[in-house]
Image (cartoon, rainbow, N blue to C red; front, side, top):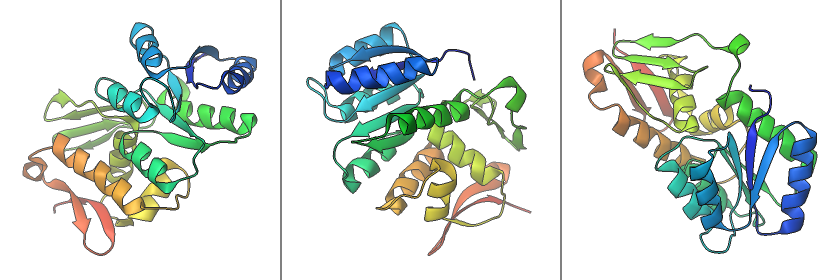
Length: 232
């Protein structure tokens, strides 16, 4: 992980934004803040950060719309902050490409730990680069967060790539949706986990068309879950 990652904190409560900024700066991060969704997008486009802490309820453009706009052009990690402990927010955020979520009120030290955990997965380190996963027509480099398919690089948000890499690292093994959510997202999720995983699988299939011709597939095991199926 780089020495001083740059974090953008987006929250319309100045007390929360200042508290988070102080804790992050104390831990060695560089921090910028925004209180509106439109201002956050302007900052993101002008100086892309390494990670965004994004409040769901924002004036101007709300957090979910900001996340949608970011995901159109970037796979930068995003952690959602929400005051509403509602399953709908969590599921929708994960489906839109959020890497994690934290419900207010939160412990500032836990928030810093979550930020570091996500950055370790997405930025990686030279000493901790994972081995490449190679199959006909497909190469996955989890450490570099790169996927090449049919000779072309495929852009994927972190969670899509991590889901693909996890399944490909265990060819032929069947995983339930709950197991995939726990392994890939890194926490137990109470809610409609099947919908979240299904959406990510659907997007992966759309980005890897014609994969059956290479002798592998992201296969559905009806009534159970999914597996990376390699043909004999």
